[in-house]
Image (cartoon, rainbow, N blue to C red; front, side, top):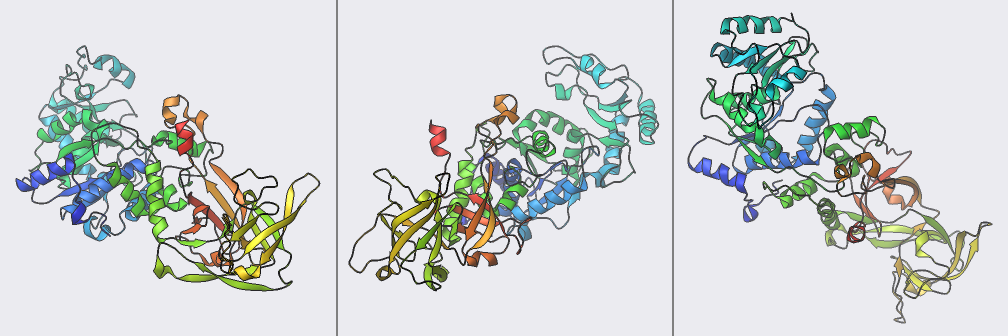
Length: 564
């Protein structure tokens, strides 16, 4: 499904640049790319980039390549390749046939060609082998305000450099013993242009290339050349790569590559509130056991949001609403929560569930009898129809829907008060029972049999309507109430981000659910009336033990907190 109709065609500075390049016929077609490094799971920030790159391709009849920039074997893994592929295909579902190229690309498949480009630079006296260790290079490189010092090997002959580079490839040297550097400008105020490393030695098995290589190209060298090899027209990345663009351009301008060559364009990264976006910190959350894996529904990963029950379309809608700018700003995560809330309000069927059950006995309802009452599936969608729900003498209601001594404007159940049971009858509380600790454990009520369907023939009104489930027909389920993982809007600004982990980010309760929910499939989403939107957990829910995740509440429970 295309989320961007002709009536609401998007416009931003990058799309304007693409349109101008098409008008001038600078490129024969639009080819973009999404190039993650497979060293972790994708998060919400990646979703913005995916939507932008695939969206521009879709809008202009082009394609978008999924390419793994896999140049660091020490941190990359097949698990991440598989998870990223799954996430991308899920997020662009409905776009895929139009804009996803048929194959998945790997920068590691270009290693031989990249090696040839490095040789070309060496022959042209634009690259050299350097023996300086990283800590030594820090001193040679210097600071932006002062010129750096040349490496001792900077003026070695091309022949010597070629021989050393070949020996690096054949494995004669240890990790870190030598590097290949681009020979650019040791006086540049941009430290990325002061003879950056373009190859380093890593005696590591590669997840995709195997044991073939022990030298690996650096990201800045690989990325621009991979773009060129794939014929990318617009290399779109986040703003932190702006300072790398001169190196991107230098590499492409100093090698014999096909024209027109790609150009890099930057946009501001997504910075949502109440989240961390650093892969390193997300990995720390996983490894230290603060969450139950990369796909924990509290994590800001695409896998986490998918498992929690968010739809791909709601995330795409959120990314569209955020827009594309160069302005660095916080994005309120409530925008994302509202996107799924608005979508599910229209399409999710309603069901009844009680998460903190209090037993109700309707004393004047016939013993051993029950009946079916008719319930509306979705008041926002007439085509959703109705269903029947069992009703009987014993019910469960939410504990918070009863108060022994209520305040003046409490319009739910209390001694002597009458309320409407959703879809069923009016009931009045006559008495209640407590345990030895003084906790209310049971209510005794009467019902008016003339009010079936929730209306009184005599026209009397009640101010309160509460939901319920039949105790004799209810099914048991584990219900996981997920909330934001951090208590602060900017966890990383608080210094040690782990100090502001929300201890209430997950509450697990034993719910009582209407029996139709036993048939709900993974991927289906419903509204538990008055409670929020829920879905079966994709990993843990089974027919023998139902597990439901709360996707989002019916309203933003953090709004009042943020205003304090």
